[in-house]
Image 1: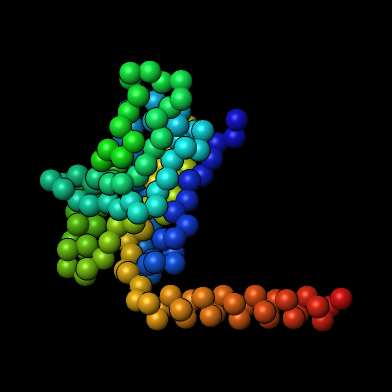
Image 2: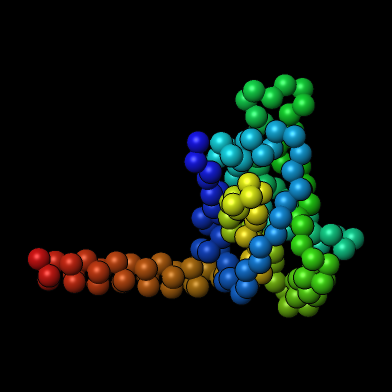
Length: 151
């Protein structure tokens, strides 16, 4: 079975991405099997620095179908693993600049470990979203016109 990437597709629509970081994630029991099966969702999830630790909230990992009473709670807070100085840097930026920590995607590395791509992001206003949609539509129209011209 191929390893899957779980993406937070709305994140780039809702936020201006300033920087991205890679973080490990501490999982329990059957969570890794559910993620490997693609039964995870990053929508509406966010990270926060608490007591010097990075914690991911609202990431939904469905219970493993073959798991029994040892199955996990789907939306429990999960600890993200990063170096202490990186965590403190993120803490300072989220506190002073009003930025948010948003997971963009979860993926597998070569060694079988799950990693989270975490973004330092600023929320978009409604007019920013409209501008992005208009620019995307204009690009699509240009590409379509060029394609028709070349035929």
